[in-house]
Image (cartoon, rainbow, N blue to C red; front, side, top):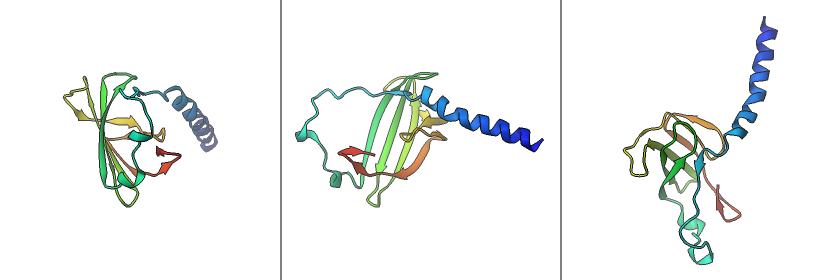
Length: 123
């Protein structure tokens, strides 16, 4: 009986990356309303201790919008808080789950992690 459970578990775990790959695009990233160039690039040293608030259109059921507040702490840790709403203006409620930038599904409305700059991009 244990062997059957192990086989079922292995098959389930093998299917998870494939399922994740099918849902990679869960939010729409729209281009900024201005050209990206060296003059509007942020110095990584200026990010520590700052917060970002942004809204993204949700592409998966049930649709709507997600509002994220990302706090970039000076020690390299970060907090990401998610709120969901029917329009870019809200009203906002706590997310029950969301897909984090790492591709992992986060259950709840927040994720704690680390941040760094690699190749000029926030990671």
